[in-house]
Image (cartoon, rainbow, N blue to C red):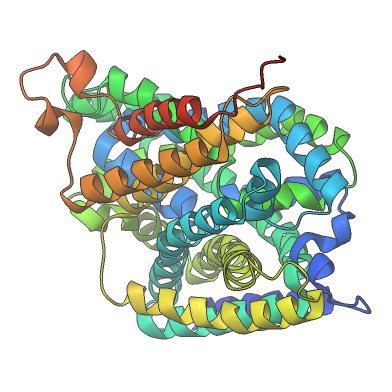
Length: 484
């Protein structure tokens, strides 16, 4: 009962903070979507962290450590390296977006390549990639609330109520509400995860070192990279692949538009990799559960952290853990839905009506956000794969924007709008085909050495994208006129 009370209290507090963040702000499109471009270093940092430390970090990271072992370290490595790239990448994106008053990722591509059609395609890619990740958040929300309430709140009820909450504060307060909720979420998740990551190994094993010693004695394979599938080759290629896609996500991309100035990103790039160390404690919890909660297989591995928490702590603290986990779903879920509704409205529906008044765009965006939320909610109830597998599909789609984005930041862009468009479409089609048949390089190229077959399959459509982009760009470049 006490866990249910704590969960309910934090849930109501979240809605109250989200609604109050609006205060006396006029919610025009720019204020609703990018906070009037007025966020300081702290808010930009919290928004970025809000998008990174999601239910995947909370459940999927520990679940991966439980089932796959030490290879779960790839999560903290790719996030830390992505922050390093932000030092150079984000100021360039912010400067161009600020000069042209852009509010979405699609705006950036459409303006850089002077192509409404490319803007539409980029928006479609963003929306298609976002929906599976929203499903992760809602699915995680349902699991967390159901387990930490000791079954008092069924999973489906938790998903529906959480979706309604996201709709309420996102429509009313926009990104300002999300930023203020992110403040509460980050403090809670940091305290809970660090405490659990230190306390649980000590409680069950006598310390972190002894925990690794006991795991090595029973399941040594979890502490080394395997010789097939999740090998060192897989690890390195997956880290590189995720680094490429990290800032391609529409909600992460658009959050850069909220900053006051470019210095904000350089400050964050220095601090943020340290914050990534929090994920190490998530991995400790997942590994601690290996011997304490044996027998979890497949999707059940995502439950390792919560089942261990329920076994270890009193109900009141389980309620706090559940509240922290709930916030890891609400903050990124609302950011994702906001980005998707803005892309759908401004860059697809009104893409060929550039003079459409902002109030009209804002109204339709706020209307479509609940529609997208309901669609995502329905997908949750269809079942699904483990959280890490869903995330891989989303990354494989969104990373197709990489070649044309990086080319657009060069002083002389060698890529034409036709090349960018062709490359993205080819990459997306191959990604969908591969995902549909659950293919890997080992199934496509049987008999090749593991150093090649274990490369992340996402590089195959990306390589095809780059090749097509280069060829089509060479064929469509405007040739300079020769003087007579």
